[in-house]
Length: 310
Image (cartoon, rainbow, N blue to C red; front, top):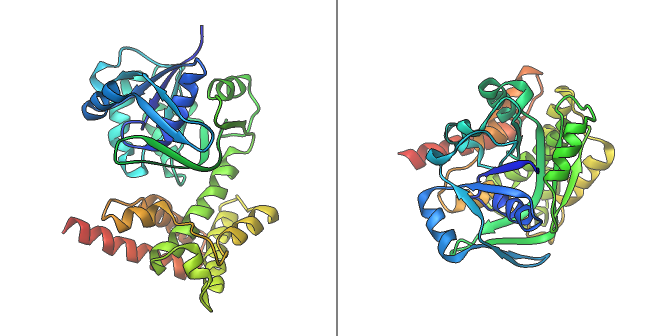
């Protein structure tokens, strides 16, 4: 009998919905945790993917928070970091003694929060690379290259359980990696997201908008250096190739790349400022790493959030 998978985050976000739909289409036992409005929408129209690697519509198995009956084997968690507390309360009845939680959240803070609530043994490391969004009709639109999902034991062990979970969390339309250095993978992505978020949010533009200006590339490299120095001080230095590719990606003069934080900010929506920027600044302080640009981004986004709640 296959592992039972609960996807948390498909209700509002495109990430869990994409991976969950692909896994369900491959025959895995997948259930989506959704709220009433999303449940009715998917019942009426199906869960629809519009994707660069093939479109898909499924009629998935769904459950609401109050309807969870007993534990699942794997919980794939892909909520925004500021929704984590509410999500944990919703899926808590699905966590049993052998449940493994695979979080795809940004930053690192969530690992401790999940471990405190459900025990360290329940929490794996996880990260993903995907460009996706919900359109006005509630369809998941995925663009760009083949999405990738990485999962692994947080202590880096290559265990049969980790390999089995990676095999279960697989399907056509994305690549799955069982990583023996998942925390490094997560830090690598955090450096990229924090640098990208700072570039776009501070300068109110795309990577190309900034890089094409006289001081733009120097600015981008300076903020990447702050993020990478903090990662190194915390014990997770970026490999040279990773650092070079990050610099290359964030200094392209013709790039239309923007951060999800910047896109949320433009819409007046909540941003993952504390989890992506604030927590990195906090860790930099612990290691006495100067981060003037990150400090400015942190201040900028704190003022934005204050204005949102005013």
